[in-house]
Length: 445
Ligand SMILES: Nc1nc2c(ncn2[C@@H]2O[C@H](COP(=O)(O)OP(=O)(O)OP(=O)(O)O)[C@@H](O)[C@H]2O)c(=O)[nH]1
Ligand SMILES: [Mg+2]
Image (tube, rainbow, N blue to C red):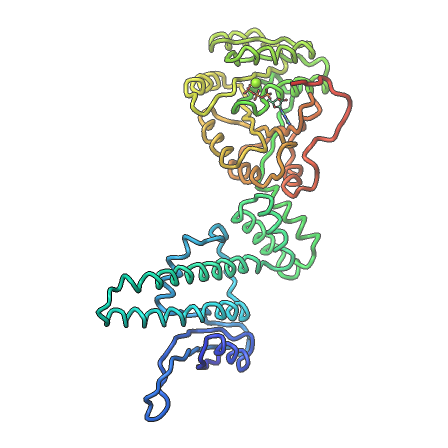
């Protein structure tokens, strides 16, 4: 390890000298501004920057934590600045040290700022010593300070971003794509780091291996589970719950149609608890009529239990519920009571893909009391990016059962797969389900 001290009029000049003498692997151990005596009898002093730099000749890698030590007031300024101007606030902490050229870039902006602050401090001192009203002179100084605050914030923001960009190889592109598609930046970074850790530096050059491992890791974060709608597995009771208009009733019709396509002898029964709106019952009645399956309307908990009792021979019972506003506590409590009392019911929470991530998280939180066994995602065709959905699903950990991507009954419903969900995040395929045979029911709303 070689340590050397450099002096120059500006930090930028000092760093150039460090680079010229110690090479690009040098790290800055400290830097400070000092008053240097000079001229006749040392009477003419001037302010210079003293930089201490180190380089490890043997390994060319620094052992010392590199740090650009800044003027105290600038440090305080940066500290205050960080929570305010933090374009990279969500970015993960990456343990990659800044390179020499990065330090140089920061220094080239921060040094004039540092110098400016120094002058401002002297100006304030002069004001204190003078008898003038300090408020009159402080106005312009405050304005200058605000300008500096913005500059420092921008520089720090861009440098922090570069650190994340320091991910090896093509991973920076992957990171940007994922975050651009709405994947949480911390989550994207964790995924990419895990790929780097598994493949190592050598493996990272194999682009195919990187892509496939990254997708595999993303799939690992998701859970899917398709209920086997088949007579072989005994009676299945599925209840669809969720906010208003997310597609519960349409999905019930799709599930009934899908079951019919799979096995025309399967006995399916529809029960609706949605007596909240007259039109809701009529909507399901139309589907039931076309599919030629019975529809029961349950107006109370007692009624509901009787309906279930009457259809013990049915292979599949699909229960539609009313979409409730978040404020409708009574309706929600009724639903909780019904699902708790009947253990066989599998509850599927329906989420619409185009809805904001924060709203979906809130919906999940609200329906936690039911409990929720599966999630159905609808309206994939109306969403443009799926990163937010990926954040929600990976965080919730609830298996996804079905995906719906259109209004056609039943074609626009597919069993969820982790592969498909990850493909959606990357924007590989259009969200719509590929057109199959003719619609069982053409839905007109
Ligand atoms: N684009 C698109 N529209 C859908 C999808 N699923 C349902 N819809 C439409 O969304 C609208 C609302 O669907 P419903 O099935 O009535 O929704 P709901 O959740 O039962 O609504 P409420 O009973 O009022 O809570 C209808 O126009 C459906 O055709 C889908 O996957 N994609
Ligand atoms: Mg409905």
